[in-house]
Length: 441
Image (cartoon, rainbow, N blue to C red; front, side, top):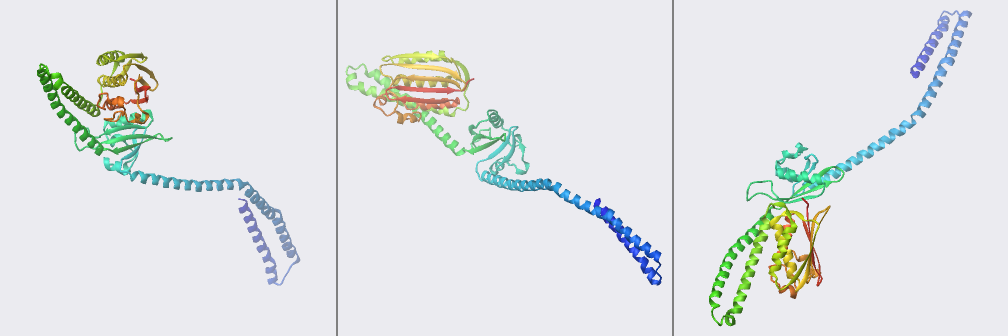
């Protein structure tokens, strides 16, 4: 505005000078110069100079002053603009680095053969790698999308919902989206990991079909083989008993045949027990669901201890029982098998007399059971292997004790079926302690 005013003043100044300069030219052209016109011309020039001095020069100085002050006042804004520009450059650089990092992780996940996807708390898939899109025939352009559009399997949705609820790493083994009895269906091990600070979750589906098929072949072989062998063994044992009953009338039976019949009877019984344990272990492994119920643990324990004590008439066993938790949420038949195996082992590995301590209690982590004996104990270097199939502690004392080496393996699988844990502590000649933990009802 001020600049326009200054330009207007200069324009009028130039106009006045031009007009007044024409006066002497006109008079010179006629060769007549009147003194009074000269006075008028000189006065006009003087007035024009005064006009310039009064209006034009102050306006110019004012304009210079305003410009100077404006520059000083604009200095903080310039700094702000410069700071914003620097931040914008840094943000663009950070954005590029983030996109590069995101691309790197995307390529890494896409390179995995196992299906992987990221989902939100409301079960919406926001990322899926190429293996998952190939498995469920979905495209990246459709993401994000509800999980129900990818899979309508209720067990799968319930598993993910449970993982969200507990907000911890969750696992599920041998899961199949195909509910039908299809021999060619695919099995997965499912794992869900919370993604920190993002309220998102990553799910990994690891293909274990080959392992499942191998386990199935092994289980079928053990089951069929055990069943087929157990039948002729039972027949042989029965025929041996008949033959023994007929020969026992002979006065020379004990001296001639007694030891042979005892060995045949003992070994046939051991073989029958071995195959019975194999069938029992296979049955536990293949059992998909267990029938949990609230059981009276004190009543079950009373019957088991009385029955087992009868089997060992030559031993003096005392039971020290303290049950704070008297109710367990377990499968009755499977839990009974656990108690039979553990207490029977405790009695076997005790000398002529001993004490078996049984404790139960409840805490924030669930229900717990402790079974402790003061028997021969287990060497430390063999303690980690006692739950392996057919493993027996290598000691002169334990080798004399009859067993199949499958009892603790059966116990471990039953505990795992209950989503529980079992832990063993032992020292030679100081006994063994088994600690069992179960989820509460």
